[in-house]
Image (cartoon, rainbow, N blue to C red; front, side):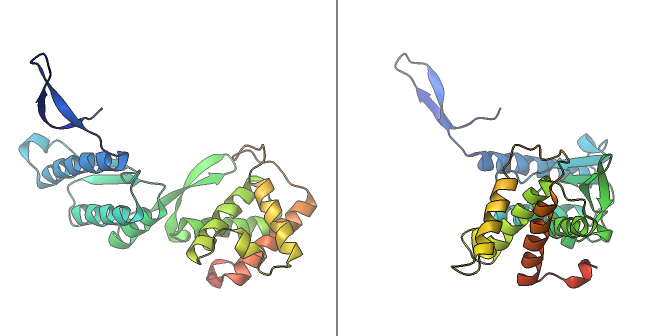
Length: 237
């Protein structure tokens, strides 16, 4: 663990102890990140103490940071790495904004995302898939809607995309983009379906099949979303 203190203070018995400073998790991560960047720079420069370093692995360095700091960290990291060829680097993250800033800054880098496959999980090259994770997931929902391979966890993915869409367009929740009119009975029903089937007692990764009626409603909700909030049609053949 890491502790911070401002100065030593005297106790009543004449001993001294540090006056500890409480910091947030985000502040602690930034402090550690500064040390890491300094050491990484020495390794890139070939400093004697670090000339043995050949690889860097960075796992989600923006945990507990807001998006402004996530963007700043991604930009600084890209600036540090993109013009050097001494170290090979792997960066992993689940933060879509951080990922996209890195993609834009480091255009020559190989880019993959972890996707669910029939036999488990696989790395897919994002050159064949949109760089935005939510668009990649929307492509997957579009595919299963056409093939009929719709499982309960697809409602969870759909809910996540709709929540992001609602936030981006300034609504207070996904219900407002499903129920577009005050007396929209279909919208009210669809909102209940999304809430129910995305919070059921089903494992997120277990392929629980749905009844045909639920599949029909899933397709209608998805089609309404894509028609009302237009995405690039070239991505959805």
